[in-house]
Image (cartoon, rainbow, N blue to C red; front, top):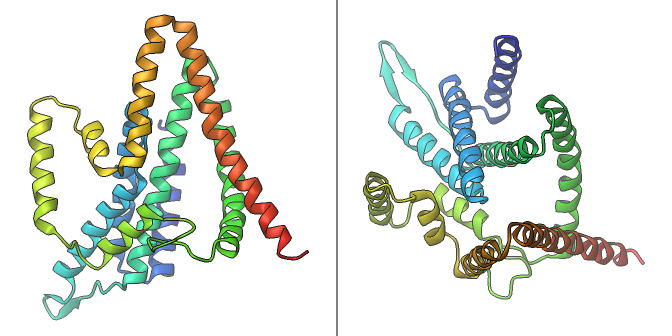
Length: 268
């Protein structure tokens, strides 16, 4: 709205300055990062509402590809008597990808919550205040939990006998050094354009191909069960959906509790 425009403008300028100072990148690339965040966050909100899945690493990969391309294209470009410098390190590129991924994750979660709040007749302003408080608290809690995880699970990453396999993060890290199979990327891009022209849901189709089998199989089974439950009755389908949400929440909470117990035992 018009009233919120000055606030959004101030926040964008603040983000613009922070990105330029912390990551020591050019003003132009800082502006590009903000534009990528806005566009990817909008896509993330839409895709999360459509599929219920928010693949944040995809948006991180998109930001890496765009920034790396512009960095290679513009770095050393001579304009008159001056040379345009956009030199950016791999570490800064990774941090920028993290900014985009977090922004997309937050956007997808908030917009999905707003969709639920709309169905439950919750006032948007009240829900927005709750989302801001939740984002601030969860950022502190998640930082603490990451500290615990890295102390409990020493072997983290895409390795043999790894305690925690970080599949998405390994994909982002591999793209930073360059796409290993560029022809496959362009083939997928062309296939996405053709499927979109045929009015086939590209996002759902692509996520099914992208995610590993052990993740897509439960989603497929859940979709079948949801279809069967809807044929039984709407109330049964709603109860089954709440039960599934409880399973996912319970699994996450249980994992956190077990990790905290293991961390406390280190000092006993």
